[in-house]
Amino acid sequence: MVELKTDASIDAMYEAGQVVGRALSAVRKAADVGVSLLELDEVAREVLREAGATSPFLGYRPSFAPTPFPAVICASVNDAIVHGIPTSYRLRDGDLVSIDCGAHLGGWAGDSAISFVVGEPRPADLRLIETAERALEAGIEAAVVGNRLGDIAHAIGTVCRAAGYGVPDGFGGHGIGRHMHEDPSVPNEGRPGRGLPLRHGLVLAIEPMLTGGGKDGYHAAPDGWTLRTDDGSRAAHVEHTVAVTDAGPRVLTAR
Image 1: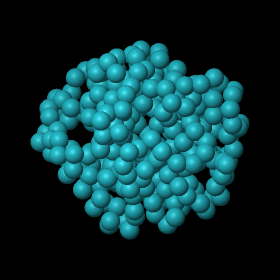
Image 2: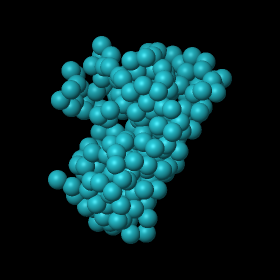
Image 3: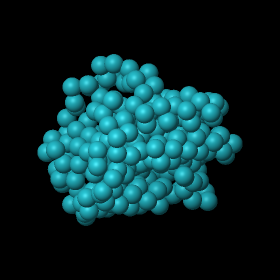
């Protein structure tokens, strides 16, 4: 069931979203060559603790997962698309890192993701990340009253495909509110003018995922969580929590 949020609820979700934004900013600042993914997870945990927030990621176990998720961030490196589990792996020069983070505060959830390169970047990685960010912007711009979900999906997919990148099928954004994952699902490709009408109070997590090799194939790693590209190409993932309002899209996780 799709729930429309009141203006007061959207304001409360903004507070949760700002905690997520601070956590991602802190992780980005701490990320450097030689820093472990577990250390980055601890940086995010401290931001959540200081804000009095909890993590919707920690202990989360959807139907596909063999075990509960053990961290407050997803840390996906290089060919990992999403859902990477933080480990003792230490970042190396040129690694492409995607960090996904969420927060529960005051009964409401926020969810956002960033991608960046540690150390000396490859030009191809910078293009991939820049395209992911443009796709996110296009999706947000389409999140207006009177449009439909298909318009968001079409906007994202058009940017990704025009640049020659792959779009993993079956994964995308979602509704968000009291829970991190709510209806509706928000695909990263679709036909304009189709799907659920966008109304004031609908809150969505919009999250493009791109694979650099141009192919859509992916597989689950042995940990049962991490999704990796089949061709070994690098991937980027970005996300914002966005409220559809009569005044236009409101980005609740803006940093």
